Length: 293
Image (cartoon, rainbow, N blue to C red):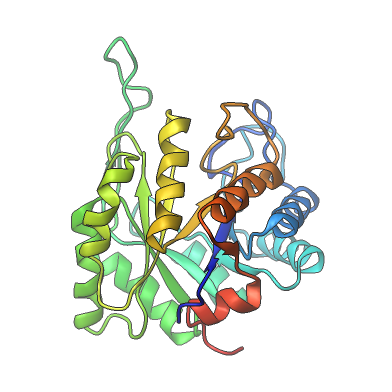
């Protein structure tokens, strides 16, 4: 359901591997709750969550420990009880037992569902790999495994799409019966080996959406100017938008920040400049046709 003059802002408060010893990103329950509250106060209605191990060292790697995840979720719900929680689920390899257990235990309103595979690459200026090439594998059987869990617990999938073919696949998933209802599609733009963060691509991507889809953009990468151009154009086209320290450290001015609230504030300003107001969580639930809880 569209609400005239509104756009949904999501805040992705921390990355999956960003080292808190090098970059000031939130990882503890208290830090995550504070980040969510800052984002909420500036206009975010959805918080996208990665969960990190709580033992210092090794960059505090991702975790699917149900106890740790529960502590983080409890802290966020206490700090910003009305926010919509969108839980990350991404894992490399066929074993989805960790994220599936967390989905079953906590039943968030939404959860990310990576909708296709990607050679996850980045190259240095000298031509060497920034990290060993990784296959972020999301074959149909793995996607279907996640959807079976989400469908059985009333969790709405948010399909993250790294290129145009993956966007087109989402409609096939629905026609095949893998999920029903509104297709929630995120265009992930700016990953070096995925589709670039280019505002001129948005009309093409929107044209390839499943019928009646709800869509947003996730813009990341090394070019802050393009990131913010994509987000502005998304609002103008009627889409929803995401920012946060998972996606960028830079404001539209080029200033580097480590506060999720300042990134959301900048995005809310862009929305208002484009004639939109940030949707409240209640409005966002209606706009995204989330089921009653």
